[in-house]
Length: 358
Image 1 (cartoon, helix red, strand yellow):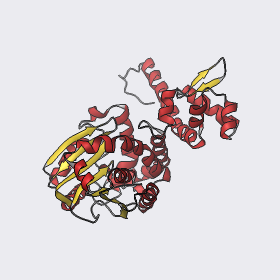
Image 2 (tube, rainbow, N blue to C red; image 1 turned 90 degrees about the horizontal axis):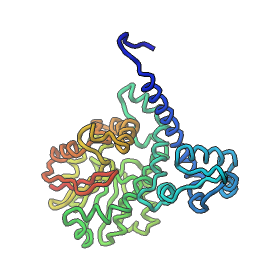
Image 3 (cartoon, one colour; image 1 turned 30 degrees about the vertical axis):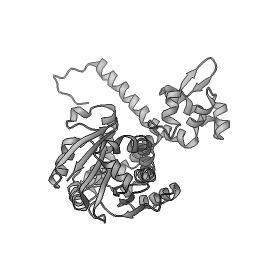
Image 4 (cartoon, rainbow, N blue to C red; image 1 turned 90 degrees about the vertical axis):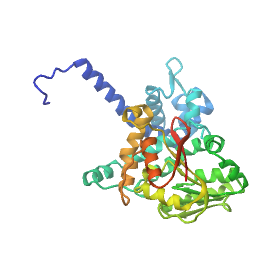
């Protein structure tokens, strides 16, 4: 190791950092372990049956005992489950069960772990892109990124979109109730589009995404929900989607991923009704780096480095706003596109919701 001759190493601080780094390795491995527990049904089984031995978990889930045993020990060491040495049983606390086994909960987390798992899986491709200052498109990632994204965001949208976010926008709910034209740009698997279509049967919804695989899934989701007659999906980019006179345009957690967010904003300005509303849902962020040095900000900066920024750089312009763009940078984009009104309409621990008007 090379250090400056005047540098004094505090051994206690060094070892504290080493053990913190060891914890980071455990956390990295736990990303895959949570995904494993989700896929094998371990969390759901523990939530349903209470204190459990490895033998019982393996038998009920029809999986190998050594895997169930080591997984439970890892989860106990990470404080995801508790362990009772006297009985040899492991328990998933009810609060943890809400986050790990209840897909209807807005706190449901396995999708978050799944998208992280898929993102890390593709890290080698991002490393090469960083060396060449190029990008990696959303469509180039493993399916765990696409599926995990839907599974993570959908519970939050289900809890907030119709009940909180749309009512926070001036006059939008009334328009939707009476029948409005809506464009959901960057719709992904269509969770947001379908939720709105279910809540407002008098309105029509057009979902757009450049990723053909996501559009195909969105069409399936709309059909399964029985809203295929009023929720249609097309393959189109944010700068080229069709239609005009939209009373509401929405973008959910995608503006920062776009190569040309200013071009997308200008296209929205052309497509929106003069009295229309553009709702932009973006990851929760402040305007300064120090505002985002938190557990949520750390996760989002990680996704920004490995997923969102490469996606932007893979497209024309490559603005690379970053996942933690913050209100000021979003405001700058929309005002340069010709919009005159901008405000934060709602917030959650994970999202900022912006109302933008012509």
